[in-house]
Length: 208
Image 1 (cartoon, rainbow, N blue to C red):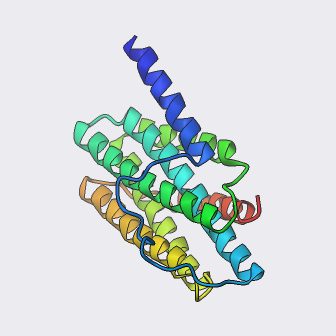
Image 2 (cartoon, one colour):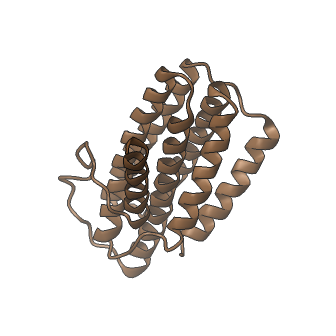
């Protein structure tokens, strides 16, 4: 029954992540910021970027769920679970913002989630140090892409900017925490593959 309960819980979590149904434990950074007038082009730009960010959080949930499940050390597992809970806040915030912009989450979320879960499981099976190194590199790349988005969001969209800014802060903290726990650097060829995969994902998710 314990295995069945865990399986049901994991399936339920996966379905909520992929459908964009999630609940944040922290207040949305955009709360209290007025919605600024935007023309159709600006709204499409904001929506496209926030959809990419939501997909990134779908992948983050899958990665952290897989890595924490197969982690060998309890301290490492607890840190991965903590980071995963904060990433769930990001998931909820970006989903809410997409709704406010009159848009939707990516139609390919099941694909993104599945692929990321497999990657997370593989990283975890290589050992905690390698898995933590994967976290460091992932968060480094995500932070860079979030900073890029902050420069590309329409100037008047302060609500999206507030969300992305807090996400960037959190990602940096997750990477630092993984480093402190003994992360082993990801080899250059693997980092290049990760960047190439991220490029495909971000380009596709902007539209679909």
